[in-house]
Length: 588
Image (cartoon, rainbow, N blue to C red):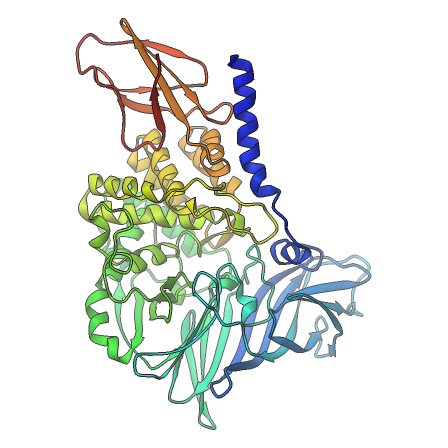
């Protein structure tokens, strides 16, 4: 095939792979759910004050959510989109005028799971509009959607523990927090000042939620547990657990972390930046982190043994990523009636007190059985997923790719670099290359599950090309410092890595995130020369490679044939360093 036409064909193929995802059929409801549309873009959530009562007799809930928000601009008529999923129902929506005690009960219409509330204009609005803070209180009730296979399908988990007692929680990722309370169910807008979560249950039960426990109030055979989250929090992370819980705890000391002097300077920079804060004054003490473990009463002895991995995790990840991002909100592991979820400061644990992933090593390397997968993976999301959150669920690789690679970094921290390499390379067997990792934007659509294993291997290759582990670690810490408590886009993460490393990785990101093609290195040898080039790749693909042929060396293939002279000494066997996820083909 003529080289020009072959290049056009390969480019067209990559576009087709991308468009196969883009051209999927999406509904108006998908757009309402996944985009920052006209019912959302004019207001910014500041705080949720959620108060919910659980009725165990009929598996229903009722309560209210008071939303404090900043109005960013005004029109003659303002319509606010509030999300609440069927079969839950909004009973009333009460808006409070700016700088007054005056409230008004607003009218609303419904379209699927979105309610559109018509807000009155403030009578005190000046001619020149300035953003202001106000609030609305939404009353609701109903029986939430029950998850059939949590956490993957999402919804309410209303079950019983091994002793036949009530055990209740929610799994909200993907399906969204609007499956159990009214909110702005959009990943790009976190409540800047956190949330207050009050859960009322029969007084024989305990209710756990995100943040720190601030109050227990008993009344009429019920107890209301009030938890306070001081940090920004994504709504899908707000989750209660209700059951017969007991707990134990330990204090983790950040300053006891032992790292090199040079890298201590990096960590200190992150610590100083985080301590200054961008979201107001908060308690920030790296001298002691309260790590609490809430478990069903009959699991207490097992938990005291298994949860030792939590302390190991914290030490390893503060080395790689910088200080835990939510010291003010503590860290919790909570027995959950499903496998696991990264609920911020409130990690769901359901791994049956075994190492690996329910006793299996997802890498088949053996290293995955040395530690508890759920503790390590879900806790990694405190940095990548909760501290740094993708604005659109289409960019979930930012959460899952880095968390998946964090498993390899944890392994490396305790068992050595080769063990970490073994682990991440072993994950490749799970890659399916079915659809691109990045999904269509604005429709609440996740990309391929390759966002785990393939994205992790992409990050691992980027590390090889940087070829400086001190700099690579600085990038990981810097990401968590630069985007501290923020929502981000893929482009921001790409730009940061390329700029900080001073290596343009844009084509690498395009190749591995936006197509399903695995680049192929074609090579041939003749006389005293080695020729090589990239095929099955995006135009301009330029990933450098570490090879072994007559000795170890780096090459910089492009789509055009390149030639280098072969040393006279060394092995004639050609190989690419195993840390690169590519195809290799010898041609005549």
